[in-house]
Image (cartoon, rainbow, N blue to C red; front, side, top):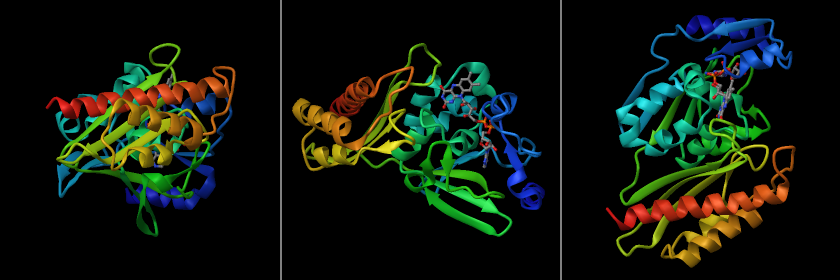
Length: 278
Ligand SMILES: Cc1cc2nc3c(=O)[nH]c(=O)nc-3n(C[C@H](O)[C@H](O)[C@H](O)COP(=O)(O)OP(=O)(O)OC[C@H]3O[C@@H](n4cnc5c(N)ncnc54)[C@H](O)[C@@H]3O)c2cc1C
């Protein structure tokens, strides 16, 4: 780790960390990215650990997608992560791609940034100067951009333990399985003993330049029983007020907005339904 940080500091913006290479190498093939120096993170000891304790699931940045997909501790402690994994590309890409690479790459259509928003995760960033912690909601700053500075590495993701009476769900719509989504939603919800919603973190992706935490949808749900009408109202609020989706060759803005409402309604229905039937 020290050697990697020294190399990154020495070469500044000319250097790029290389994780699974599943986004960086295609970008280099297209000359969209032309780093003079690659700093390979693959052999750094301890950077792909998955551990649980002190109220958090801690995942090293170099943990492969496939490791998270198959991990029992991830399935138990952060089932939303496990649920999203099969939607990311194909098995060959998931075998190389890493959690840290996906988050640092910050593709607005990627699944894991949205999942981390829904789970209220915190990221540890390290440079030669020291380390800092940034919550997922502050990490993504725009299209393929984050708060990471040149010379800084994302080293660990901490996912807080699930509160009692909580549930999750994940949905996306893609043209073909494994394609990037036209729109998708990840939700983490909780209810109290009276069945009223106490938490609703709904993260939408592929609907803007970064993943979006649906604040209007949250407000429509918290304090209310999750009836079909409340859920529909929250989904409509998310689509109408939380996002301003772009149109492109894959989908118009109006279609993405429609999909966002449908995806939000489905994740909420599934998550709340699983709480009714323990
Ligand atoms: C055909 C294809 C389909 C795909 N489909 C999907 C999909 O549906 N959904 C999806 O989410 N992804 C998809 N991906 C991308 C895949 O998930 C990548 O693995 C991921 O986006 C990047 O992870 P990586 O480890 O390969 O990172 P790399 O490609 O090695 O790096 C990506 C970027 O992050 C930086 N970086 C990497 N690690 C760190 C770190 N620890 N700290 C700081 N910066 C770092 C690199 O310098 C680079 O700029 C697809 C890729 C391909 C080739």
